[in-house]
Image (cartoon, rainbow, N blue to C red; front, side, top):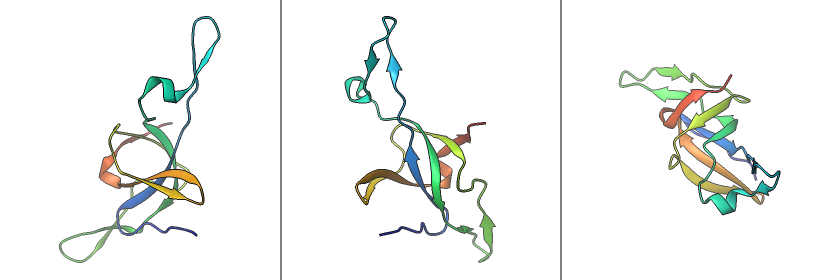
Length: 96
């Protein structure tokens, strides 16, 4: 199953960041309780439809690493993988 986001929505694969303690012990995300707020765009819609009916192109594209709010978007599961579907406006910035 593949998903193609509509309009100004993007499909994001959250980045799993391992945290290492001062002693070198790897702390899993589940111990922290916070979900990651960075990820990679794996699919994007065509853009937002304006009031005049024109399509405003997206500022982000597939492959961009993005920063988003902790509670942004809707969690979806595609072929066993946890992804996030969100509007372009929920993206805070592109990570260089």
